[in-house]
Length: 266
Image 1 (tube, one colour):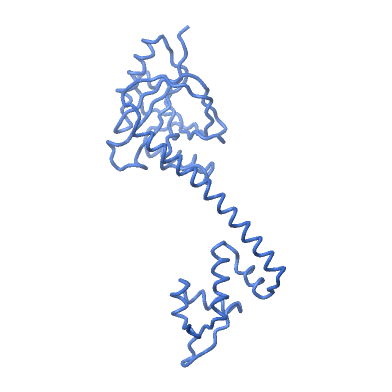
Image 2: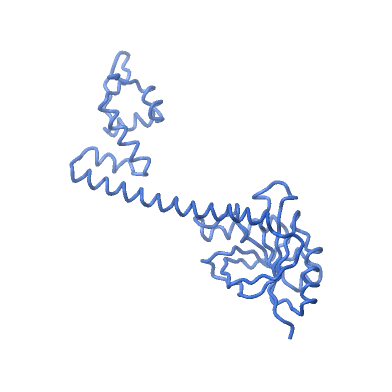
């Protein structure tokens, strides 16, 4: 085994920039000796110190804490440090488990999206669904994108856009009934922590492929279905985006769902 390593060798071996190595030296964590031409030469004593620094930095420990430990190493301090490392690792494991569940759910959503029956009006039963909602009139996709960004900020850790079929817009019935399909009154993200609620009950639903602005074709199908089954609409049209530009650049692969709560005609 080599006894001395130049700064370039250490930088490559540990994937640490020379400036960081000089900073560690300035803090007194590394003590390279000097060779010919005043080159820094790192010894095995520096290597084990670098191993400690690398492992603790990887867990997010600040340099001040690392320096404090390296300057006062005792069995008690080492025991305390290892307990702190373990706590950080357990937190990371929990975060990864939550991320795993999140991505698994989104993958399932994507798989479910492509299996949706298209162009067929169905009745679906939904429990009460909490949501984050912004009531703000808009008419264009660009305006909706701005509202969605505001909604995502409600919970940056848990709200996401890729693989999410719970993002949508509110279209008032009076606008839809007169063919004003772009006169939305707000946007929402269905989420258990939301402060607004979509009531439980029976909803008519229809999904379609392609551009999301095809309500003039599919809204009348829902009207006809409701009439044939003695149902009346009881709330705004919910336009849910199963697949849009965030999941596919191919518009023909986009999938939109229209939902509206219904109840029996009096």
